[in-house]
Image (cartoon, rainbow, N blue to C red; front, top):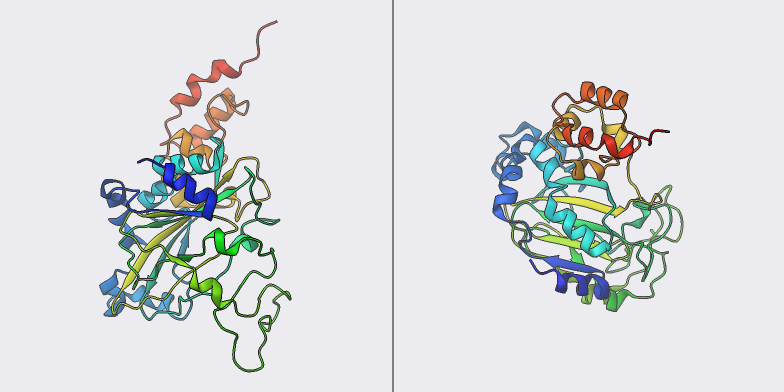
Length: 321
């Protein structure tokens, strides 16, 4: 797929929508394992799946984090086409994946309609950069069709949001009723919630699209989740985020903290060196690798093919004196 339009949209508007960027052939193995993680549309709405209770009343209750019980969904988060897209938009080949989530939403389970906001408050220690090569890319990936009545994200082009400072960060469509101010929630630092900005909503763009659509956006892009209105509906997506390897100020979790989950072992034993490097796994030829560390990693991950790492051992041996 020609990414020239996506690059232009990314640079000028802060986001790009790529309908059907991932083919059915790419999606099918992951979609086939959705039932390992979430109730089906029918199972949720007819009450036959006992897991349905988890999803009620909280818009974020449907999020599972990497590594997933489904190895196929874990592998999809680092598919070669997503890596290529991230490298193209970020203009850098040395990337890290800093977060990956799978998300199920069901009509009527919760209120999914959000205020316009940016994600930087839990993605970076600092603020989103503007006009630099130090961007990071967030991606929404549609595992199923996401038409307008199934809660596609809405995004505001940078044309209409340029110049808004880092604080406040949330802008409602209309001011709340009653005496509660925008920062009235207990424990909320003052100044991050603003009075209404209805004009921003007038310019938001729906990212509705078929299965395989990828919505790539910058950290400073205003966006929001929208309501699911189709009776008996469900939406299954992923939220995957990449950054430059050196951008240590951008992260959401440390992968080593997840690296003893059974799902992690299943993922590692099927991942490529390129995919593992996205998590900080030392690449072939790195000085970390010695006969001892290779032997230890072989014990920890008996199903991982280490032949490429072994083949590069000569690249890291010091020259003889």
